[in-house]
Length: 114
Image: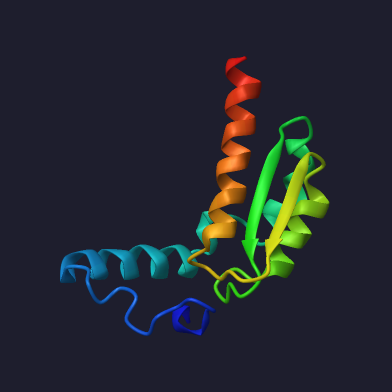
């Protein structure tokens, strides 16, 4: 899945120790198998409750694990969310995606600590 990204590599996790690879797979599989422990549709259904809480969603266009339409639906349901679709990124992100995340963190840090 990750190797299909524009800057992806077929062996992206091959350098990790076996225990870390096993833990990563276990966490991901368990979360997916249990629907992140949310009732089906709960996140989008209840996203309006986030009104007044700002958020920034940074989504890679080539993210096969969490496709952009999911982020789009959440951004439409969350009144104070901003969505950035990063054309050249996937699940692992990219320099452009990291720049959006850093900008959002800087903005929130300034707003909270000013």
